[in-house]
Length: 344
Image (cartoon, rainbow, N blue to C red; front, side, top):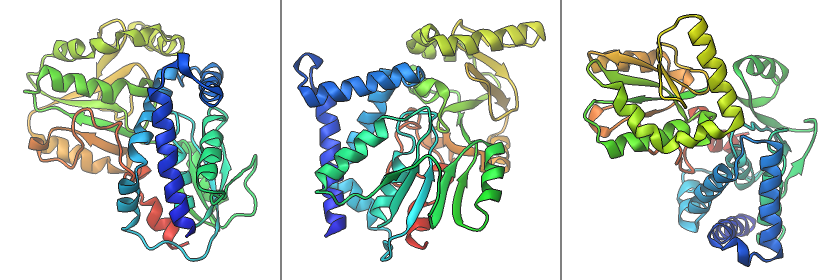
């Protein structure tokens, strides 16, 4: 009965979010006005979390939180019969990045013990409070400043932090996530519309997410200007102060070092084999044979969250424009969180 109430509450939460996003701000009641104020407070405290990007993340979740999608997701798992306390150390790079972990822990019949990121302190508590309300009080959770009294842990951090976390939690069941990024592979005959979709994979959330494309593979004869033309819809990104600071800094470094790069005044492209690129920079390389790309992807699999490409390239991938639309069964670091939670 508890899981049924939780699922019902989650679908009602999805409807609640959707209704808020569709409502004219001029017609907000007390509840909606409070929610809007919370989002604005979040943006003020963390300028990377613009209202636009918060709304985008909320809209994605509103679309996922339907009864059919939740039940289809859960039917692949045997949920734990014994409730455990699962510590969650959440990231704060993009809005709602830890929400999937939280709902996974709850729906797996466990209690999330949550250490919020200092960069994202308001939205998740609000959503959990509403979920619990819609579920008739059937959602247990706890927010803490320091993890204590837990049976397992799921933590997200940088590669350096991950080494510390793996040592610190070595005697506990754990999932420790590290830095990952995403890549895109172009065949060369993509349409303008397809390249505009790729721009969404690159620029959404300012490129701060693990599903953002930071490395491109393009054919030898591909014209770089085609990409710049497709990126123009995101030109206003340079008006964001923090993004502009990164752009100015990286451009100055390249100029001082006399490095070759391509520039359209809001993003730079650099021919570089590195998988990770600085914010405001896209690394790219040209290939002769698609097998070269497949070899690179295989060798760097542990650092790649997803590959963006058309189906006709024959790669395990998501379509152009799909990187920022993961499903409920899409897991960070490609580690099945629900399977882990089913056996702790």
